[in-house]
Image (tube, rainbow, N blue to C red; front, side, top):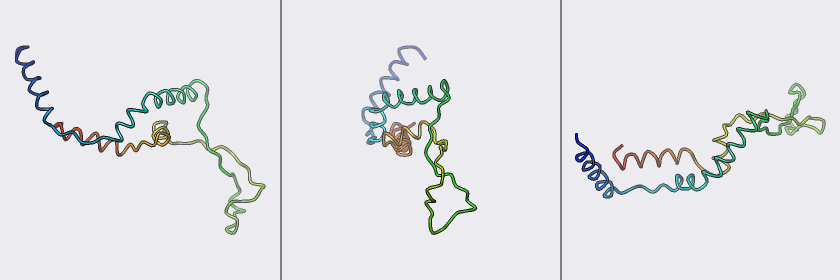
Length: 118
């Protein structure tokens, strides 16, 4: 196939794409809007973990479960607070922070691929 026929084929593909009704992608558009900030925060969190050894933690009550009292599920004032490492990925935490639903993004991506015949 020569260059002229390849260019001609590409033009036909682009022209036929104009006729395709593209689905709405609000979640993907939102992801695109926050991607620069999200990437910067993600790089910072990766740097903290990899270079400084810091990890995202959440507070949790440490208790002796042998002394657990069903009538006082929150524990007593003598319980110790301690950090528990957050196991969610950076991507999941960022999606939650920016209120992005990764499953919606994936559905929108698949709908776009279906629309263009991919």
